[in-house]
Structures are given as C-alpha cells and as structure tokens.
Amino acid sequence: MPVRILLILLVLGYYALHQDIWFWRTAQPVVFGVLPIGLFYHAAYTAAISLLMWGLVRLAWPGHLDDDETSGRNAPRTAASKEASR
Image 1 (cartoon, one colour):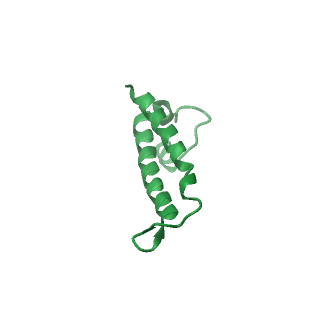
Image 2 (tube, one colour; image 1 turned 45 degrees about the vertical axis):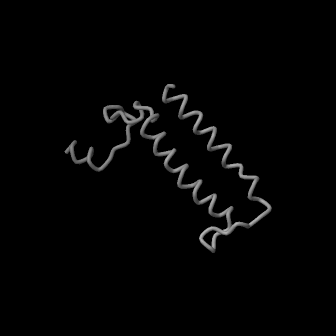
Image 3 (cartoon, helix red, strand yellow; image 1 turned 90 degrees about the vertical axis):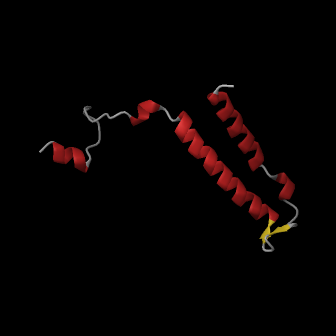
C-alpha cells in the first residue's frame, strides 16, 4: 500500500474518531480518579493527531515549498540576505 493512500486513510480515520458521540451523555468512567472520560479522550486524541500531523509533514510535505527563492524580485528580504548583499 503506497504511503499516500495510507496517510489519506489515517486522516479520514482520525476525522471519524473526532466525532465522539459515544461520550456526550456521560462523564463515567473517571480516568485517573479525576478526569471525565470525554476530557481524557480528547487529550489522547490530541496527542495522537499531533503524531499524525508530524508524520504528514515528514512524509507528505511538498518539497517545492522549501526551495530557496531569494533570486526572485518578489522574495522577502531577511536580515541574513541584507547582510550578504552589503
């Protein structure tokens, strides 16, 4: 299975998991003695989706966005490029 298809399926799966209708009407069980299950679910979901986003950036980031375009007229001038042109 190509990586692109796997990433698309993961994004769709995480999107479906975000719609957590199963914890809307109850605060039980309580996790670690203090966290309602819905809050714990969203904390765990946030950690998992952060890992997915990291993977998306590492594996699917378009390479042309990182190209150095300092030779163009419309390229923003940074402090380093101003120093180099002196």
